[in-house]
Image (tube, rainbow, N blue to C red; front, side, top):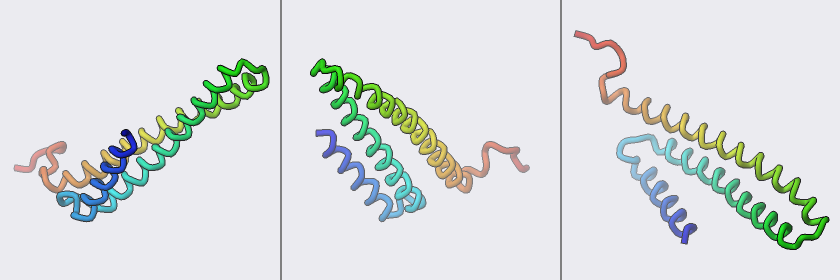
Amino acid sequence: MKRNGEAKRRRNVAEEAEQGGGGEDPAMWENLDRNFRQVQSVLDRNRSLIQQVNDNHQSRMADNMSKNVALIQELNGNITKVVSMYSDLNTNFSSAFHGGKNGHDGGSTGTRAN
């Protein structure tokens, strides 16, 4: 089941953070885990909204069909929110990852000192 895999991933992230993540900052992993939980919360809400829209549509009742407008608007807003959250996650992870690597690679992106 998908939830079991997600729970295992979270435990692995937490364990890696406790063990120092191979020399990385444990706070970074905790932050990533917290952000993924926020994303998952919005995705779970989207799943619920989609089910409500489907139920309303299948009922073919005018009142339920009109409720779908607001549900679909919320779903659309949530999709935009998820895209933004993933973009922020990418930026934060890249910054943390590259910030940690710069000390190890000798600053290979800059000019080389002779």
